[in-house]
Length: 308
Ligand code: ZN
Image (cartoon, rainbow, N blue to C red; front, side, top):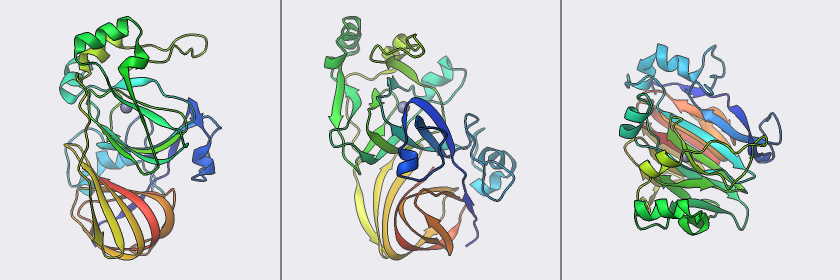
């Protein structure tokens, strides 16, 4: 091997809709029982993860030692990995694509994201897409407050995976714990907030932009998933899109890898084991640096990995 294993120190964000599962499930030390987000691997200024044992954050390392990331271009570490604990419903939102964001959001990037359901209540649902046949019909339904009819709500189960392309309306609903892999961007248009108040006032909505960027009619994105054996591991390829590829690994024993990517994000979801002898356990988040090379993975664990 020629690469390094960087261990991240997660950052926690309190949210009105957050809960305590980041403590009860992952045993993180969280700031309160309204903790909504764990920013696990991030170079984003809104929560730039420190690297354990180095006096640097991932964002600083990206700026200063780009060769560790295969000399990829860009101002910011391009992917952001979060664990989201939604005790209550999040607002309905939509993200623009890169082209729209570049023009309307000062050259920002758009956002593509995907969700892996870590756990959820038995009757949990999410919002993904809508039921309007056209943008005109969507605008009319919004005008007439026919949200229930407009929004496409689907039941979810542990282990489900959803790809959310720009222009796809979406919301995580209460009782859901997910791992999110996304482009590192913050451009979000809030479409609907169930008429809720925050500190006595409704939160700002972006109806015009949302109608502008939402694709109609909605076409579900269903990436074809393939599972294969690699040593004692079962590997499922969850998605490949222009920004990332995401895989799930269930390991019971030993498996070999040969990494040739600019970097790889690894999140341990359950169990424990070792990566080239480095002990890892549930809740650990690691970054393998450029062209890491051969690796022996051992243990009994489930993990998600992603690369650009
Ligand atoms: Zn989103």
